[in-house]
Image (cartoon, rainbow, N blue to C red; front, side, top):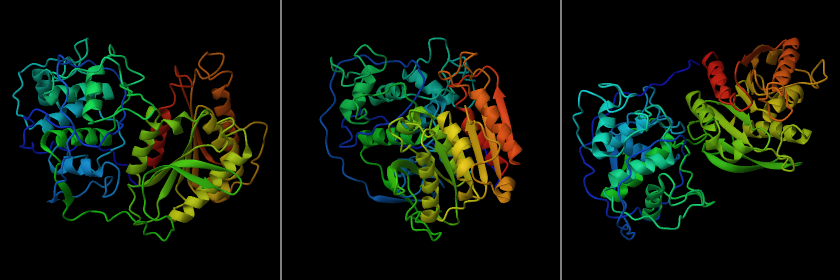
Length: 504
């Protein structure tokens, strides 16, 4: 399959309905928790009045839209209503391959362009830029000039706007508050969030979002102002803003959808492809949960699968938006793969590698999903980080490789095989021909270099694993990146997998 590197489409035609009405009513009953990262300064409006009381906003009628659905945002999938509204209103055109990339982090520059189109304003920028990293006449210049002229942002203190930086919850809260017309809002003297004080940056804008019910905090009481927003989440932010300003937007529906409901049509028993968190699976011995990302699949043919094993502690499973799971989601969407992020059943240590029953559970999960969704087991892509990397090398390939016939493994910050000269179970000749194994490790990921996790020598582990499987006749590679430690190397997982998928 040819890998498509998406680029943003030509900007859609400007919507004509301006966002000129001062916000007078909150979005009733729709508090949503969204995610982001990075820091930036935006102009904060002065304080004075409280928001109006909530009112019920009647649903708008279904309206036909001639533009077809994005291939990765189908009816019934997450953020579908908001994304479809943005598409049909001309706020976004998505990418040239007709995807929206809802799991990808959105940048400050992209956000500015969305907000400008949302506003319906027209703006003639000056010949010079107010920011050192925004070129006059370049992409986003008009939108960012508009935001600066309106006083919605003053950029960073160093003169830059941060065009390519991911936008954070706090930053987007500040932008939306600036656009709201509710500059007189007085934030409560006691913070509703456990991670923000009244003196915190973005506190007043974040409290405004909470009070108006546009966007709420998390169930643990945090707001997470520094967490990065995905494109799907940004769509919901803006949909909420539009609803508060002008009432519920039309419920757009493509007149000739490219895809049907997404029901599994390949003969499996899994039912409708969907995104779902915390699905429980038991193999009769142990039980655990997994996150499933599959609502971008249509069942027109058998699909492959990507399985990511977390590092020790399981933080990637527990809080995916702080990890690189969104990058794996994007790859899965680009290449029509199911993505599964399982949680180890060994909760006493929260590791994959300490108990053989954990890797057996993962192998059985693959077989269960293969049956339910009629998966193409010639396209199985294992990824693992740290302890998960060791598990892919020492357990999955070593003992369970009979469960698939092709694909690849991308093994980051570890991946050793210790004290063996042959696999615990034979590796088939077909797999040796059709399966690749790639190790990526930071050169400083050793105790001697001071960049390791405790006394774990990830460089030694990667070298041992690479040599072992090379000696077995598999297609292998080892990349040791200078100047990188155990933590800095983690983005290299999706980067390497993207290269592998591009060449398949």
